[in-house]
Length: 230
Image (cartoon, rainbow, N blue to C red):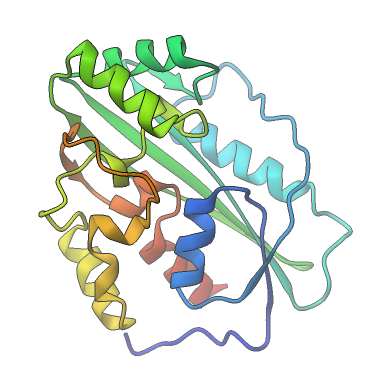
């Protein structure tokens, strides 16, 4: 990629506790500070699909009003699972995770991530959308996955990096080309998620149409392009 981010002139803040977002942003080459603020994550009931994470990432960014330095850029994000005209949040417990994965089983759902970039003088936001196709899951597979990975911090009760075949590159053609342009081709592997837990010997995701990193919670290619413009 011809254009490169001028990293030295900015103080980047990632407003997220997500280890996946922290890992991906670090792999993008950004040095950043993690600062999170307590934000009410409720949203108007009339919002649909991408409108929800866009609303929430902006809401998270608004929490930094009055606290940013001249060279600071805060990055906020929110990811939802959308199926049957309904939003899936993070599961509260094992039983709710079971219900979610049963609903996703054998179906296609969409994942939307909203990202907001905010400085002292300006703000921009964007979203990424991906379609995720699940195979049919047995109750045993569902229970084993939840017991092993405890996906209570993940929308829809699953992490893509834990649920795809390890021998298939997960990224789209566009994402793979982008990774090559920033000298990060190694990110186009499932192992790049650096899960510390053992595979359960199965997979849920048959295919992803769109951004794999979006499903992980931070669309890297789109974020890089927006930072270049910001």
